[in-house]
Image (cartoon, rainbow, N blue to C red; front, side, top):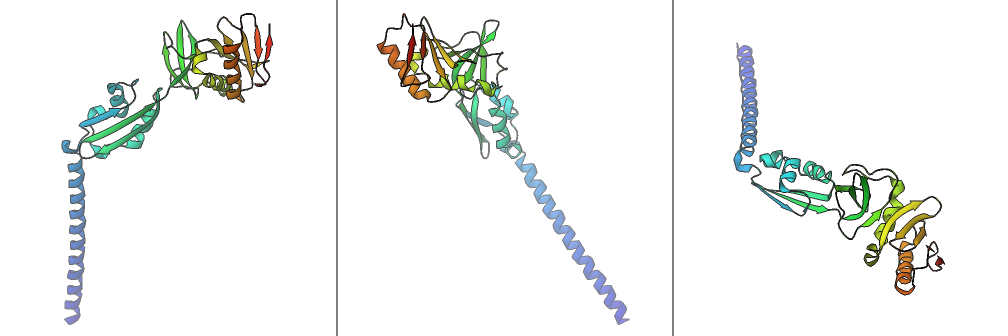
Length: 246
């Protein structure tokens, strides 16, 4: 009889332990479910979204790309994913998304800057930045951009020019601002390398996209001090020894 009673006590004790564990698990699960449900309530939704930077991206576009326009719960927002989605927009160089609990989201956008304008056909112009990314397709290029002439048509906004076009972009980036307005085109020739055609002036041969700073100083000096009306070609492949051909 004692053995039987002892066995029964052991079984009841084990049952009570299992019951306590089960109740603890259920209690924890209920607490977690309650916290999740509370976090998904409208009290913690993205009701206040501040956007700074990015004049080329409208507020509606930013909200649509990130999904913040639907006021999702902050707990469901992935700041990294939303920033990556914004950086796929043509004009966006960098973006950050910060959650400000309980109802705020802060979006900061740093934009790219157009460097040159490339003919895109049908009287359209593609704006390109220094990395070769096509930013926009417009009817008329803004003032102050270098006119680029490249083989083939540009990709759609958001795409990149081929790596072979990078020397032209480097030369356009090196052009002094006071000279850009006098440039008719910047292009690449097999025999001469990078060349700059001055409007109503000579063809400037830069050669490889190397020592561009020195070459541009030499070009600016020639434009300022030498009458170029009778000059047909300027060879600046050696920046310190320009060769002028009438």
